[in-house]
Image (cartoon, rainbow, N blue to C red; front, side, top):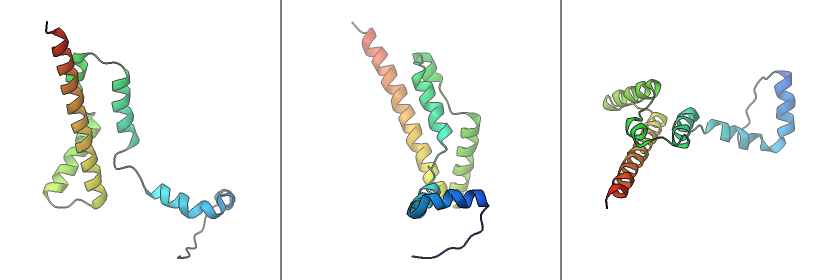
Amino acid sequence: MATITIEVPDELKDQLDRMGDRLPELLSLSLKQPAVPAQIYRYILNFIASEPTKEQIAAFCPTPEMTDRLQTLLARSKAGELTSSEQQELDEYERIEHLMIMLKTSHLYHHTSQSEP
């Protein structure tokens, strides 16, 4: 195991002292960020939890910030410039898009089959 020496404020030192042997585990966890920011998942979950109408589901789309980020990732991918973390982020956006397509398709199919005699 490697030894690392860093300077930290006294308040942080006290907190780190209380962590004891768990510090390596906590550092590891803090470095493992989700591929997509949590607010994106919250946006989608809040939408689903709002019990949207079929029209709202059909019209659901990403936020402008999500669209901008996705366009950036796609451009970097096309140019062959994606980092591994950006590739993971792009993969996660694709999974989210697939989920939303399934939701829209399922909801439309469910409503269509209910209206048939």
